[in-house]
Image (cartoon, rainbow, N blue to C red; front, side, top):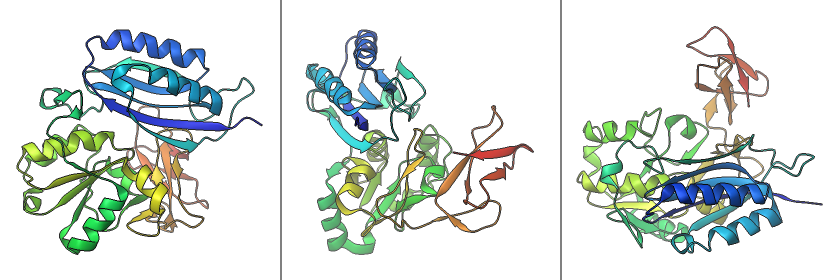
Length: 301
């Protein structure tokens, strides 16, 4: 029986010809029958792809033949399955694009990379080092969520600050507003799904005077693989594929409240209106809810 796997990865490294890398990545992923999303920029590569496990392994080996991607950070997770053609059920297609930024903060000129990765970013912490930092400094440590606010509704680090941002581009304005200046004298740990957003966010914070900035290496994925939801993490992890979310125990905390009935839930729903990207918490008893911006119902993922 074939196993479905999803690969989440990124690498920050200067790329002289991003479009050539795009063409190569398109051919490589197509050759192995993978689906997913791959972004290439002058700063490196960021992707999530899925398919049959041996095909994903061959794709990863091929990608790592590029000198800039030899040591890139990768995470594995189980996919939902394969269709009759052996393609991942978690992605509708393969998309490979060139962008100015790997993550759209709207600040490409603020990001500098070299052969070692991001220049001037936060200090990397492994899950074990994060645990030690919290044990040593307790409530002095601030968790700063580097994801869009909707992602944090169903899962986050305990006591984390969640900026009210709808898109990643909103972070620059939020930081420049002064709303978080009171944190500049405290140890701030940025975290995100797999780590790529915090590579940039921690640097943006450091350049704005946050004196002790850390980033969780490998993101929530790496931490939860090590500790599950027994320690600092609670709830479910939002993911940008057909799974919707993943959990790290049989009974994750339900942090959100159903928009319709108010019952605890760990599920989000997409608005049915094709022009709306709003997502709302829903519970199993009310899988269809109304979006506040539209009269049409939202359809659960």
